[in-house]
Amino acid sequence: MTMNTERQQQIRERLTALQPSRLEIIDESHLHAGHAGAEGGASHFRVVIASTQFKGLAPLARHRLVYDRLHDLIPYPIHALAIVATPT
Image (tube, rainbow, N blue to C red; front, side, top):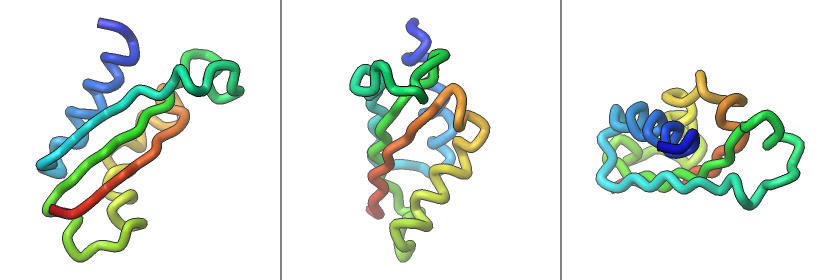
């Protein structure tokens, strides 16, 4: 298992608390090679998540729910996180 596969699993485990009906965790680190934030092995991910827990929430509030579950991984080992969060 590669380091980023392990990080993806960490993300998945933390986000299961949101009971997602859809969850994709995409490693985009290769797109940021040479970027200062990627130095030292920090990773870039995109999370696509759908959950009933997002119903009635503004996009910023949805993102906060995701960040609340991943805060201990940011800024290292996750340097950047793109989020697409939709209600189901």
